[in-house]
Image (tube, rainbow, N blue to C red; front, side, top):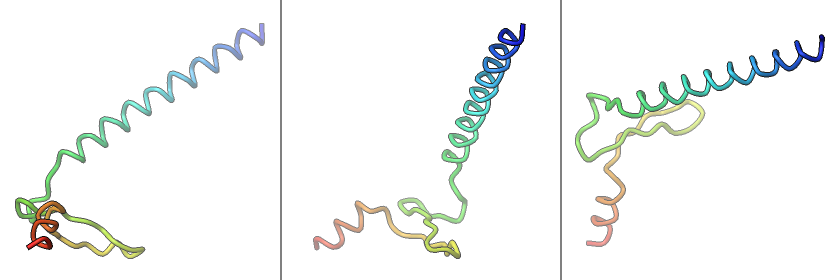
Length: 69
């Protein structure tokens, strides 16, 4: 009987992990779609260092074109 309970517990843990993974994916995709209002078009906000200092820089492709000129 205990072998049956152990199998049930493992299945329950797998189901919980799967649900947690699905929730994490949903939250990650929602936050990735959100664009900060203070970042101009063609720019991206990045956080650098241990203090998470924020910089707004031009999109990398535009920087390459500018460096080429």
